[in-house]
Image 1 (cartoon, one colour):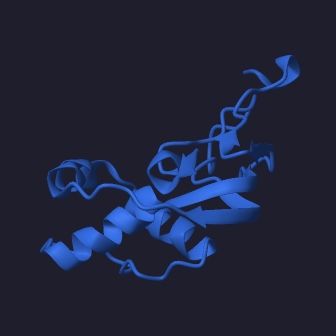
Image 2: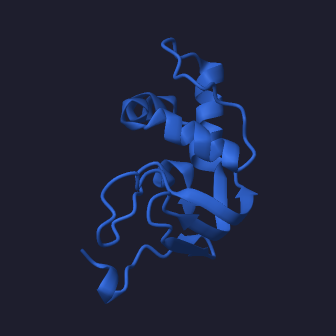
Length: 123
């Protein structure tokens, strides 16, 4: 399933696509919200690994504006609840992710992204 926690780690690896290949842009997506168990310690530990601007941009592409544009220095429970929702409860079920550089399309079907490249696209 494509959740924003996963999306924040994905970049295009098509042949010759080495710059401006992150973050992948969502296109024609359908989204489902699914509750997930809240774990504040996990979120605090994962927070330093996030590309914040990419996360906020992806969330906004999917219609969620709950995260601030700048990563806050002070992390309280209200912020962690919003982060939890964005990272773990928003599921992209159908659509595509598109590389901002080479425009390669990675389809999403039944919540599963197809990140495989054809032989001629492997660098």
